[in-house]
Structures are given as structure tokens and as C-alpha cells.
Image (cartoon, rainbow, N blue to C red; front, side, top):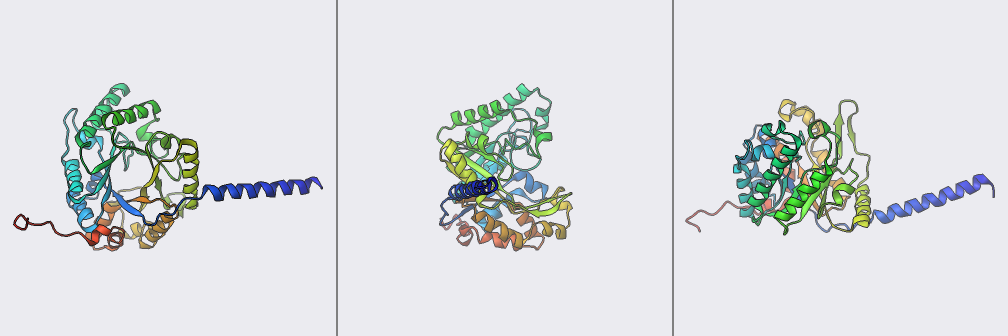
Length: 346
């Protein structure tokens, strides 16, 4: 047999083995049903010019969401050193308790929404050691306040801490020792609840986040836009996530994994309120929403938390209810919600 034929034979065998490995690693049970949740962000609702309380109530009562990821943004919780504001989170947790909703509570400096890392103005001027100490103190207060809530089921520590893209200017270089200190603190304060650590689905390696948490959460973005490339769709197939899941499980052991951030809002560089509706709908619309939902089904995640309910509600108030109406069909609670009973009825 000539060298060329041997090379082609070995190449063919290698490709077949690679294909077999991919097929095996891509195996993940398809859930019978998908439980959909929503991230809610007080600061983002305000950025849209919305009343955050009306928005949150609508998401619970009209949209019917019963699984939330909430964010205890440090500047919102501790706007002045040692002066705490829990008006927003107290209301959100109380309403979740009222309807039997479940909450993933996010704590840390890097939490969902731009600019990724959220630091109070007063803490920006501190030396790094003092800032870290102040951050741990804020986290201790938040965990202490909500660890007895029946609604809070999971603590998320930081958000995609290992993803430096888009965030380095605001977050700086990741201090993994301090991240481990944050996780250890939350675990000590509330040993009964699992800790979730997240990483980007498209760009993350996962091993840093997966190895540290009891639950691993990842993001899925399907439709993108940037000034150089314009609009484009992800080239990654859904089974790519199943392969990464299985590789992490082989390395670190099986654990619960969730799709914690499934984007269903337009990819923009400017605030949404400054962008014409026509432009918004070129970046996200019902057709793309359906494509995103179908793509996410292929990842086989049983829990999928959507991202963008605040925008849906803002659109609804602009007489554009299509995204909101489609979202209602994902949440069975929207069909059951009734007005609270009056005191006389009770």
C-alpha cells in the first residue's frame, strides 16, 4: 500500500473516531418539558423609563413567571457605606413568596447587565483590599437577609466571572482567590442552599465556573450584531452545549446545569430608548424569538431562563405587545393567575 493510501486510510479512521466521539458526547436526555424562567433587573427597568414595581408585578401576574433570577446590585443595595436599601429586593422576594415563585439570587460585584461590574461610587476610590472587604460585607448582609426566605432557592455568586471579553475595562482582571473567598463566604453563611456559578456559552471554557459551583449556569445567544460584521447568527450548533456539558461532567462529576441566560431582546450598543423601534425589530422580533426558542430546545436544558421581559413590557406599553403575548404561552401560570382575594372574601 502506498504512503498516500495509508495516509488517507488513517485519516478516514481518525475522522470516523472523531465523529463517534462527538456523537457519544452529544448524548443528553431530552427533557419532557422545559421550565422557563426570567431574569429581572431593577436597574434595567429604570433605564427603560419603567416603573420597576409595575413591571415586576406584570411579569408575575400577567406574564405568569414563577422562576426568577434577581440581582442584588451592590450600588442599589448599599448606595452609601453601611447604609442599606432593600426596598426593591424586599418587595420582589415578598411577591415571589406570595405566588410560590422560586428565586435565584445573584450577589457580587459582577452581576447581570451592562457595565457587567457594578460598584458603588464610594467604593471605586478604595484600595483593592478595602474594596474587597467592603464587598464581602455587603454580600454578608444580603445573604443574611434572604437566607430564610422560602422563595430563595439558589445563590448565584458573580456572573460569568471568567469571561473577560466585553468586561475587562469595567471589571479588571479576575482574582480567582477572591472569587473562591466569595463562594466560601456564601456557603458558610447559608450551607443549606446550592451555589451557582456561570460562564458564557459561546465564549467560555466552563471549567473554572463548573468546578466551583454546585450548579452550573450558562448563557445562550443566537442572534448577534456588531458595527463591523452587522447582524449574524451563531455558527455553533445546539449539540455543542451538550458536548461541553458532558466533558465537564467527565472531568468534575455530574451536577445540575441550567440555561440561565437565553437572550430574547435586541443586541444594541445604545440604550434601547434611544433606538428607533424599526431598528430594534431588525435585531429582535417574533421570527427570531421563535428561532431562539427552537435552538434552545436543542441544547436539552430542562431549565431555561429568558432575558428581556423588561423590554417586552416596554414594547407592550408602546402598543407593540407581540413579544409579550408570545412569552405568555411559555408560562403556564399566566393561564391561572387570578386577582387576589379581598379581605372580605378571606
